[in-house]
Amino acid sequence: MAGLRRQIKLGAILTGVGGPGHFNTWLDPEIPGSASIDINWYIEQARLAEAAKFDLVFIVDSQFITPDSPPHYLNRLEPLTLLSAVAVATRHIGLVGTLTTSYNDPFNVARRFGSLDLISGGRAGWNVVTSGDAGTAGNFSQDEHFDYDTRYARALEFVEVAKGLWDSYEDDAFPRDRDRRVFLDPSKLHQLNHRGEFFSVVGPLNLSRSPQGQPVIFQAGDSEQGRDLGATIGDGIFTHAASIEQALAFSREIKGRAAAKGRNPDHVLIMPGISVYVGDTDDQAREIERELQLADGGFDQALAEFGRPFGWHDFRQYDLDEPFPQHTLKHAERAFYTNAKRIAELASSRGLTLRQTIEAVSSPKRTPFAGSPLTVADELQRWFQAGAVDGYSFHLGHPSQTRRLLDDVLPILRERGVLRREYEGSTLRENLGLPFVENRYTAARRQAPQPHSAEDRQPVPAH
Ligand SMILES: Cc1cc2nc3c(=O)[nH]c(=O)nc-3n(C[C@H](O)[C@H](O)[C@H](O)COP(=O)(O)O)c2cc1C
Image (cartoon, rainbow, N blue to C red; front, side, top):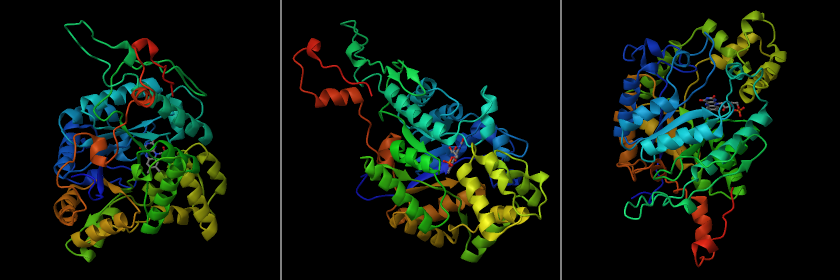
């Protein structure tokens, strides 16, 4: 039975032929060269993850590329289109897609995620991002990307509007009574009438709700504004985790912020993206890690990719052996500023040249999750039990490593009772241990004194 014991949540990040830092994944003979645009590949991966009782598959996304973008980014399917196809080929696994609030409209997005939620029987999730690639603006008729305050304020209002639209119909709005010839109960249909700083949306949305009420909201963004957004609207947080100490501090901060906003911190699940390297022994695993990471890149590759947080600024124009050009930080102001600032601070605190900075950033990092199956299982459990994470979003890259994770590591955790053996429910919310989202109008009606007749009904406030 769900909830008796806290269990590790599992996500599978599917990045086909290789995302950031994994430029040579496509060379693996087990990965089809067309994986990122092959729906059968996604379905196969999702079914593998579902057989291992993963909570969800996670599709990251962006809408701006250069020839230096990672292979998966160069040529990939649009997340909701691909997840709709995966939905009909799976039964239990959650389907989380990334969509930016900076280059969409809430009505479209609410309708698309609402549709995925219905198609999948209540398994949809939305990873809310604001777009770190500043160049995206050029693909949407804008000269410049939004600044941080604007893009995060817009994101908050965007999600609030989408949530409002998802509640357009109360769950019993459609009697579909042929005898009485009543298809709709209009008192259960609500206009949103939202007028805010960024959006004016009358509503209602022409779509009813799914068995989980509303799609699950994930959030990814690490700045002050990003963390605040996550604590406000996130059911799940997608982040990085370099060490247990850092993960613990992050988790405490986000959950503390959520609690301060009156939310239940247990309903904000921290699920960092991680890679695991598994060998027969710890030494062999480190060897595998080294080999797979060495296969990735080379300095020229690292130099080209280095510009991404800085709005894809081209660092090839600078002398590599001069001090890191601090003025380049201005190119990051509307891009991945949190990450770029960290890099610039590292360079100045250590007095690094540009070459040394690139080497420091791109040098293979020893992941905390490399070792024998037992070592990796122990570490995954240790972080979880320390409260540093609620689960993990695994980068499922090389198939040989995915097999080791699924066949050798996860069974240990299952045996220890910290991983599920069977899905608890049929919706993503049920499986993640998140409550059903009650329709706001139904809730208001339930809390209000009972009216004597339909005419006496109190108007319910629009949120
Ligand atoms: C772990 C993580 C994953 C992210 N994934 C995406 C993504 O898939 N697509 C996207 O456009 N932005 C993604 N972002 C970018 C954020 O939405 C944001 O625009 C960017 O990180 C800069 O904001 P920040 O300084 O608040 O992190 C991600 C950010 C983080 C930290």
